[in-house]
Length: 175
Image (cartoon, rainbow, N blue to C red):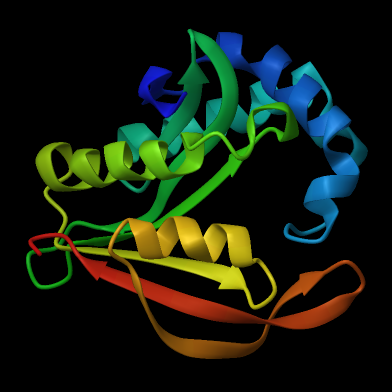
C-alpha cells in the first residue's frame, strides 16, 4: 500500500482535509501532541497555520509537507528548526498519519521521502526527531529509517495534563 505514498509542500487548499482529520482523530492524537485551541480544528484555523508554515518555508526555517495516498491528504510531515549554517546543517522531523491510513506503511515511506528532501533540496547533514517514551509505533518508523535514540529529554513536553519525557533520535544523512 505504501507505494502510493507521496509528499509535497503544503498548500492553502490542504486546510479543509487536515482539519477534518484532526477533528476525527482528536482523541487518538491527544496522547502524543500538545493541547490546541478550538480554532486549530477548523479549516480557517488550519489555513492560518498553513500561512505561517509557508512564511517559515520562505524564510528557510521549515519545510512543511503533506503526506498523500492515492492523491488524498492523509497526514503531514514537517522539517522544522532548520539550521542551514555550514557548521550545523540540521533539521527536526515531525509527522502524523490519520487514523484511517495508519498501519499501511505511509509514515515510514513519507519519512524516507522527506529524508531525501533534507539531503538533496535542503542540503542538511543531520536529521533529528523526538517521540514520547510510550509512542512505540513512531519509534519503529524512525528505527526503520535509520534513526538511533541518543538520549532522554526529561519533563520536556506538556501532554495530556502532565509533563512527559521525550526520547531523542538522530540520523546522519550522509550515512
